[in-house]
Structure formats: C-alpha cells, structure tokens
Image (cartoon, rainbow over all chains, first blue to last red; front, side, top):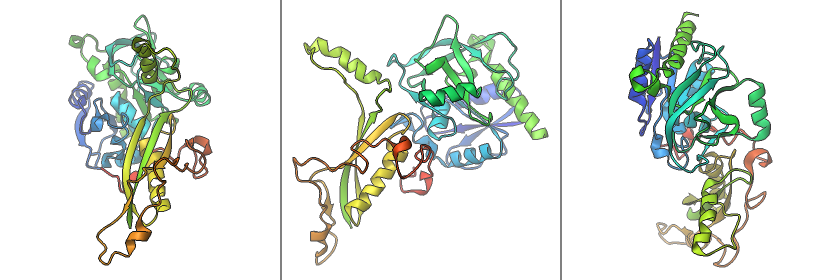
Length: 227
Length: 147
C-alpha cells in the first residue's frame, strides 16, 4: 500500500508525514508538485507548510500545480486524499473540499496542543480510532478559521461531513464555525483537517493519537487496492 | 495591441469576520481618533494587460479576479482602469496605431467605470456568467497565469 505525499515549494511537513505514514505501515513516497505522476499511490496526502509562500491566500497558488490535476483525477477515480493544515487550505481553494480557511479570529499564528472529538468512525480516515476518546495533537497555523455560509454549513452538518471538532479544555484555537477542525467532501473520499496528525505519531512527541488517523488511511487504502 | 492597466480591489464580503479591520479599528483610540468605525481591510492588485481594446482587456482581468485574486466564497471585488497608466505600444513603425491604441481610460478625477453588474460584483449566485462553483477550481492551468 503506497502513500504519496505531495511536495510543493514551501511544504515543510512532507518529511514528517512520510515518516508517520511509514510508521503506520505504508510504503511512502514523495510526489513533486511539477509532475502529474502519483507513482501508483493509493492514498495522496497534501502536507502542511506554506505552499508557494501562501502568497495571495493560503493554498490559492498551489492549486494550479501540475500535481493537482493528477490529484483531481485520483479523486474522480475514487482515490483517497487527506489534506493536513496547508494541505486542507489547498483542497479548499481547489474546490475539492467545501468552505474556506480564514485568518484566525485571534489574528495570531496559533501553535499549541488541542483535542479533537471524532464525529464519525465509519470513514476511511477514522476507522482505526477507538470509540469515546479525544485525539490529542498540535495545531500550527495562521489561517485555520473554518467558514462556510450558514445554509451550506447546515447541509454539511446534516450530511455528516464534519469529521473533527475542537473539544476539551483546550477549546477552539482559531474561531472556526461550529468548532470545526476537519471535514470530508460529499463522497467521503477527501478529508482535510487543520491539526497535524503526523506531529503526534509517536509517544516521544507527546502523543501518538495522530497515528490512528494514518493507520485508518493505510487500512482503507489497502482495502481499496484489494477490491 | 495596446496596454491597459487595471486595479482589482478585493474586500471581505459583508458579514465575514475581518479580524484585521477590527484590530485596526481598535487601535484608533490610541491615535486620539474616536470618530471612525466600520474599518475593513482588503487587498488591491494592479496589472497591465495587452489587448486590442479595453473591453477585451477587461474580460481577462475579470476572469483572473474571479478565479485567482478573490475567493468568491468569502470575498468580492471590483475592477477599475488605472487612470493615465494605459498606453499604445510604441513598436509599430509608422505609428498610425497610436491614436486608436491609446486606452480610453477615465481622465484623472473622473470616477472609474463600474464593473458590469455593480461596483463590487458578488460572484456567488449573482454573476450571470456562471454558478457559484464556476469561479472555484476553474482550469486556469490552461490559461496564461500558470506557474
């Protein structure tokens, strides 16, 4: 089971994500943004960082990279895609996920540990998460305030596309509507979240809860390959 | 062909939280100013387009505004010519292209012409040229701004 991790100019979590995907049992390969070849990846991860310097708006320029047309085709074939932090911003700008990530309500770059409630465990991104726990992992972003107009937000909630919410005493770090930390698209094959599972993939980092998400992806990707 | 210079102003939509604007506004009392409110912070993009006419150039600018400079979900924009900054190309020998090539921008002091549909067109739902999703994820990779 191969996981491809996209490397944009300005990505800075790509190596951590490759490492965490390997810990989760995957063969993990980098995917350079100038190529449209996904190298046979069953799962594609868009990592954190500052793709294209976050110029104009976070994610706005990265969506025109050649690799993104391949990611789009991968989604159309039913492939799995996860966007972490800046990767979530890129997916939103590309229209592969609904909504937008606005400047944090605090106007500050928020980097700290948060806890996530997992709203659904019947998804390719959360199937390995045991019931009844909050996932502890860090956020580090300046534009993570999830926004969607009221009527569309109601539809997102009703269709069960909200996957992660900020919870527990640490609260909501960025002012996201409905405490949303991560969502899925309508097909349930594309997911984006602001917190960093790859930075919480080993106990020595303070938490290995993030590994549960990567394990979910690896299991799902392997199942998809078998099917 | 002539050069046409435009300015695209991008602003957060009404109702969208603008923490920058709020932070600026909250700092104003420190300047001794307590008569100002409704501060919103946006961005302005200026660019020059080579085209046969100003309407042709404006089509290009409108497309870039909708697909790149603004995120129609959260921002709206307006396009206006930059007065006095457009010009004919000087590379035509014999030069009879100059008079017709000079862009008919408004004279300094004259208000900029408004974008069709209003000075700050709202692309979501109100743009006659497309649906709310047409401005997102459009295939600019085929266009001239590919990086």
